[in-house]
Structures are given as structure tokens and as C-alpha cells.
Length: 366
Image (cartoon, rainbow, N blue to C red; front, side, top):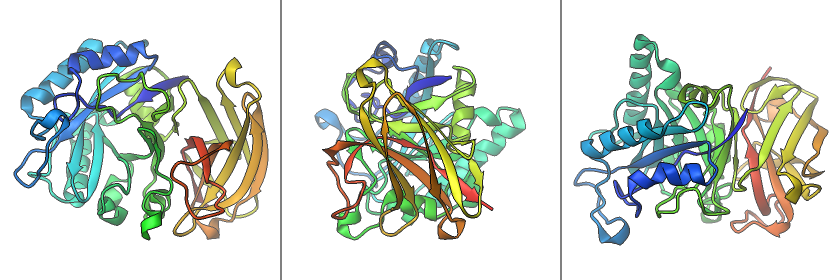
């Protein structure tokens, strides 16, 4: 079952403008099926600055954390609407990481390095395992990757946290992060993350700081393929990387490679991979020309193995030669060929048009 989700939002409990009691109803009324509040955890004297309206930017405290949990519990309706409490671990240099399905929160006053965050996350998972709730506890994702110069310590890999670190934001607000930092001599966050060894799905989020949660057209959001609309169902889909990033409300994306769904391990060594891609948005987009770019490892930007023209509403099938020796992942980027990318990469790159969606990667293993 496809559900539409926004897993990154803020309120006056950190640096947002809106009353947290209004956030979940706003997102539900906007047509979202799954929503999370993830206010910043930015306490400690080492962080300077102010949030919206000049308020001290101190982030969540214990009362705010409790209130977020109470609001999520009050609005969660299994089978109808899933409300989730989370938080954003926010470091001014290393970057920001969202965490969901945790019993507690942390900030950089006590956990100052990426390794410390990962250790805390994996400990949360182990504790949940002992209590029998491991499927619902301790998931995280990389936010607006490359915006902060430290970029998660260069995406330094921490093997114990691989299964719990489930997402990389490709759309944040109105921005496509594929080429973030490349113009300054950096590497595409998509390439850097996946080449480091992380196995993240690809997420779109609004990162809302106003009071119109879910209502802004063109901001990022996600589609999750769940077995049930519940917190457990959402957690399972996130762990399976069975989701896609988009910034188009109501978009449907489903994709397989050799019959294996996006976000999964693909047993493949060499030769053609058969892709099936289902993109749909109802009558208004029926027959609309779109383009699929098959992204592969490269540097500093992803290589493009193939560009395929498709039409929205059709199930498109195409074969692309894929050699595992050339790199361990494949991503489908779906774009509007008629519109330019507001944040383009190198001149002539095939992804310099406007992205509509990203399917989560396939991870190649022989």
C-alpha cells in the first residue's frame, strides 16, 4: 500500500513558527498519511544563534520532548493516520540527523561527534531488541546533506549503525541535493554517502519551519510502500528502504530491477538489468513526458548509464547493462525534461533538468 509521508518538521519547540498542537492536524488535512515532528535538539553553550523571530535557538527540552510525544499519541490513528515523534540532532559543522522511534533524545551538549551519535543510536536499538520492540525503535537519516561543511565527517562509515541509518534527503524544502557542494569542489552527497558504504533509501521532506505544515506545493515529501498504515508498518518500510523521494503531491513511484523492489539488495554481477518503473499521478499527468536517468557511481558526480524517455501513467520497461565491478549501487532519477534543475551540476550533465522523484537505490551484490 502506498502512503504519503513527511518525516521532517519543526515548531516553536525549536526554531519553527507554528504551534505544535496544530502541526499534525494540518498535515493530515493536507492529505498526508504519515507525519513526524522532529524539532531541533540544540542545547548547550557551544551553539550560538537564534531561531525564527529572534528567539534563542535552544531546541528541545524535556518538557518539549514529552509534549511532542503526547501530541503524536493523541493524533495517531492506526489504519488512518500515523503520527510520529522524532528529533533532529543538529551540529553546526558536522550536519543534522533525524531520529525516529526512540524513547529519548540527545543533543550535541553530550554527544558531540558522529561516532557518539551512532553509538547512542545502536544502543537504543539493542535496548529495544531486549524489550522486543526492535522493529519500531532507533531509526535515523542524513538531513540536507552537504549543507554543513563537515558533511557527517565525510560520511565516515559506522558499520553497526548501517541498518538503522535508513535515509538520505534528496529533496529538502524546494531543493534537490544531488549536486550540493559540487560547485565548491565537493562530491555529490549521493555518491559520497553510498560509496562510503551506507545503504540509505532516498527521502523527500518539507523541513517545515512555518505554520503551514503539508500545504506548500513543490516541497519535498516521500512515498512509502507499507504493509499496514501504523507506526510498526512505517518503521518496517523504512528499514526495508521501500520508499521514494518526491516533491510532487500524490505521485506514485514503484520500481523493480530484475523483479527486485527498490531499496533492496540486487544479486547481480554483470550484464543487462531489467527495470520496471511505474510512475503515475492520475488524470492531470496522464501521458506527460518524463525522463529516467539511471545513476551509477562516479566522481565527483554520479555517472549516467542510460537516459530513458517515458510517459507518466505507463509502466515502463527497459534494460540497462550494469557491471558490479563499476560500483555497488543503482538509482533511478525521474525528471521533467522540459524544466531546468535550479541547482545544476557540471555543464552537460544529463541530470541538469528538474527532478520529479528519486527511487531508493538497489545495492549490488554478486
